[in-house]
Image 1 (cartoon, rainbow, N blue to C red):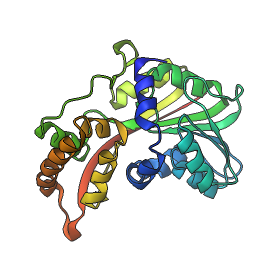
Image 2: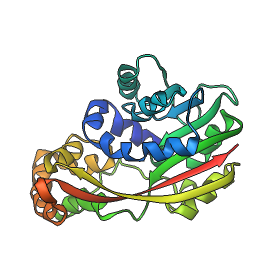
Image 3: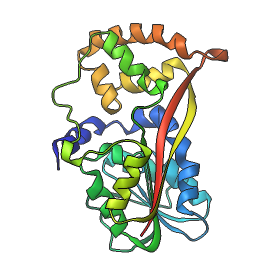
Image 4: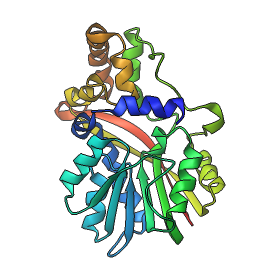
Length: 268
């Protein structure tokens, strides 16, 4: 594993429940488009890679697909198993998954390439386990992203918080532009054909306290930044966050947070 993979395991260890209560709602927005691109329907043999709390798995099952799921974090595996008890859910991490060549009609990974240190190798693995003519579909966060994506980071910066030294980034030789063209090139380089990539935009609506709860609980890299100076730092960032939230206030007191993601698909 790369240093980035090691830090990702540390970030997500034991945080399945906090993720399910917070960020999972945001990540679920792209699920219909993801499954449409995968052609998920009755009888489709589909693998949900990085299944998290099970939103993709449940939606694919509802479409009649024959679904299996896998995640690197045991807590996420347990969460998806509870949500979809009839689905086989296994523990496994990219770029080596516990499935034979050509096992699936479609393989989907919703906001998973963001969390692997070798994205190209991960895509090659997704291609390997997809049958000839089958589809691989992925989503990632676009960079630069929407203004709502930067809210917590702005609050942390205003509070004087700095990124923990152990929190690694993707090595330059394995990184790629988080743009429609950058993701398209990555899928093409991985050997996929008929590749298409597009940007998705939406406003995520959330209660301000609910939106803060994820980072405060240490969810994702931004949560590690918020908690980098202990309770005092969390409190300082929260004060800045409360001020910045006014920029995104909507009727009824919720936040309306613009987000940008990328969806790309290709055939084997």
